[in-house]
Amino acid sequence: MTEHIKIVEVGPRDGLQNEKQFVDTAIKAELITRLAAAGFANVEAVSFVSPKWVPQMADGADVMAAVQRKPGTLYSALVPNMRGLEGALAAHMDEVVIFGAASEAFSQRNINCSIAESIARFEPVAQEAKRAGLRLRGSISCALGCPYQGETPISAVVDVAQRFLALGCDEIDVADTIGVGTAAQVQRVMQAVGQVADLGTQVSGHFHDTYGQALANILAALECGVRIFHSSVAGLGGCPYAKGATGNVASEDVLYLLHGQGLHTGVDLDAVVDIGSWISEKIGRTTASRAGRALALKKP
Image 1 (cartoon, one colour):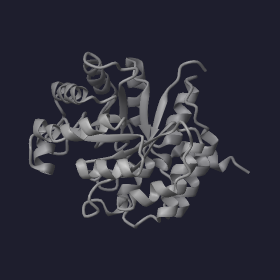
Image 2 (spheres, helix red, strand yellow):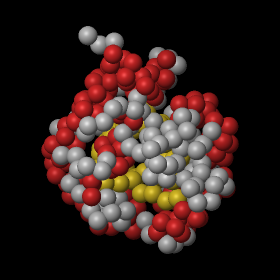
Image 3 (cartoon, helix red, strand yellow):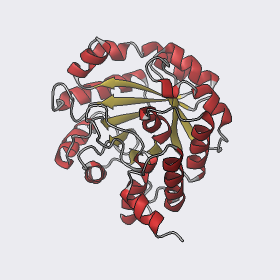
Image 4 (cartoon, rainbow, N blue to C red):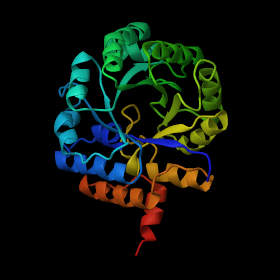
């Protein structure tokens, strides 16, 4: 194993926020602690958004206060505005994540403003985050498809990437929010984004598995030169625009794939399988990871 692939574990935030029943603060903190111990160098842990909109994430400050932090690990928080950034600073987060859609229809339907206007709102957040020494990540939602307008124009994805870079983002997520992308489409989008950003160090692939294409899309992005990917332990999460569909690709499945390709992640797959089984039991659901289920059955 020579080439390193960075995996951003998003289960504690992007995964758990979709759970209907409130997950105890102590369980969230233990999940984050265990994931960092398993070797994930970047854990998307919490979000500082209005509890009115995302009640599951209302305890972000308490969660981070209870996490046993591992030196060298990046703990990230999603922030929608200056108030969210203040929460992230108070919780001593290492990275904040801002977001914008590549779909004009999605932007208008969800926040009643244009893509350009939505990203302009993040200017003071980005400036203050950089001033405070935080790492800044920008997430491009609906980069491969939109529930309202269908396929997203590649030019729109590139435009949002450029806007995020102008804000000072250190990393940009190309996110298939509804999981409709295919391998050929992923390559076209990544190659275009690669014209304005470094695919190996600045761009990540965030693929949902709604149509079972996430692993194929990761391989396609790998071929383009992308070396950062997002995944969620036990496949935590859902897709709000496709009822009953799985959401984030499972970390266990991604690790099994990448390790099989001879790539280094620094993450202990065996430990992640245990974490996936544990959190699934805690929240009363079955793991969505096929590799996780298969490997768990082989354990004594």
